[in-house]
Image 1 (tube, one colour):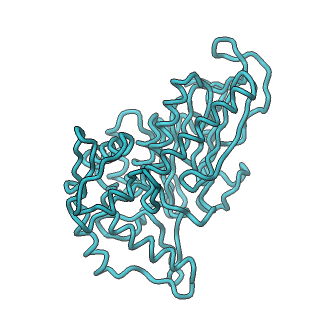
Image 2 (cartoon, one colour):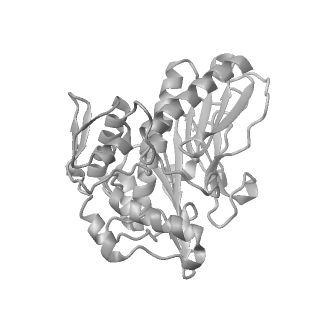
Image 3 (cartoon, helix red, strand yellow):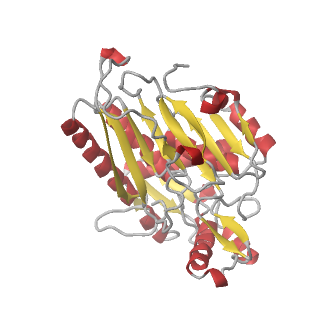
Length: 369
């Protein structure tokens, strides 16, 4: 699963901007229908706050949809967990535990997550879910440093280099016919924190749309996925606030870097202000560059906008770990992907498509692109 996070400071790293009118009753654009707005949240899946905002016919209908969303997130939480066992269930932890021993029969959602991650890793690099051996070292030192800041240390580079010898994605063997996954390297482990939450959000969003839910937004710890437009009779797009990495994380608009307006799209941010600890006055965050085996330091934060939440999650790490020229060139090559970079000095760079949907550049939820 996505790692249990004992901090809450990054839960609103990117948030649903509270710009929506509660209980609107004007005529809507979509089929001349207007629905009331409802929202609810839970905190027991992927160890983060997940909020659902939707326009439905009535509260009872919203409650039914929300219960399905919650249930599905819990199922995916268990499947993608790399730290806990569940009776009668083979999950990612089971695969890691059986590395070098035997293939593990798993549910389709695990096979597809690994295939998705492998496909995009070979396309764009940087985000390697087979880097668990390296990321586990950083995790252990980070947890120890957070628990006892005065004794915080960096993982030894020698240990990191040895761990990096066990990150070859080709050693992840998938047997689709038998629905098994086998880690051929006994010292390898999978770590899906860079993709699992967004991937799960995308799965749930598509399933709920197929179930008839057509005006909603899910924010899973900052992984935003919108479906349809707000049925409030006013807006044609949803407003999503992007956290300013230099400000405290709150829902107040003054602490936002900007707001982007989206429809049928996802917004995901990665930054150095999320999971981190401090050693000798220097902040060390959780986004580890596979080349240096150290936290990336090109930006304070990046934000990706594209339709698929899993891809947005994956790419937000990739473009964070590349120098700007390479990062911008990669985004330019990808259809339907927009990005925003927050440089170390606080200056911003944004693709032309991103600029078109930013509030600071004149965009609003009431306007269609």
